[in-house]
Amino acid sequence: MSVNIVLPGLQAWAEQHLSAILKATTADDFDTAFESFVAKHATIAVNGKSVSREEYKKQLQGEGFNEAGAEVSFSGAVEVDTGLSAGVVGLFYTATIVQNDLVQSAPAETRVQSSINLVIEEDKSLTKPHFPPGFHGFFGE
Image 1 (cartoon, rainbow, N blue to C red):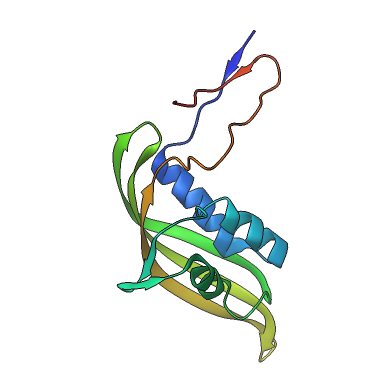
Image 2: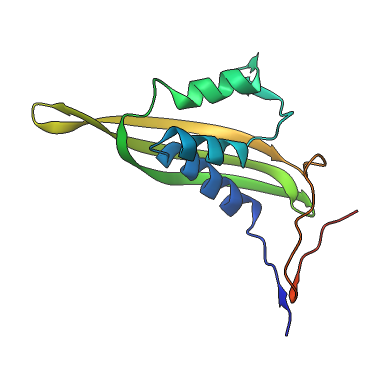
């Protein structure tokens, strides 16, 4: 019996990966989430200004990891599929980040409302995974 791998749609993939970044509570969790979401040679613009991948990573990372957790909700999305696992996704989201710091005996919270536009395409620099017997995946040549 063989099992085919079913990939999530572009919108679901983008929401899952962005949520993982925003919910990271340790540097290791953040690095893992960021590395699996942003390609090594990505072109990034923030508010119309070109920034390096490292600058963008630092901006997302903020002042360090002093959060107890986060809730992320998506209020809207636009997806244009341009082919096999490629396309454009726009997401509107709200992230409520709960800090470990207490203010008048209650955890401090930060609420961020933002949007992000992504161009999702195959990263040719990645090596194809090796699957155990019985698992199959399609990786276009």
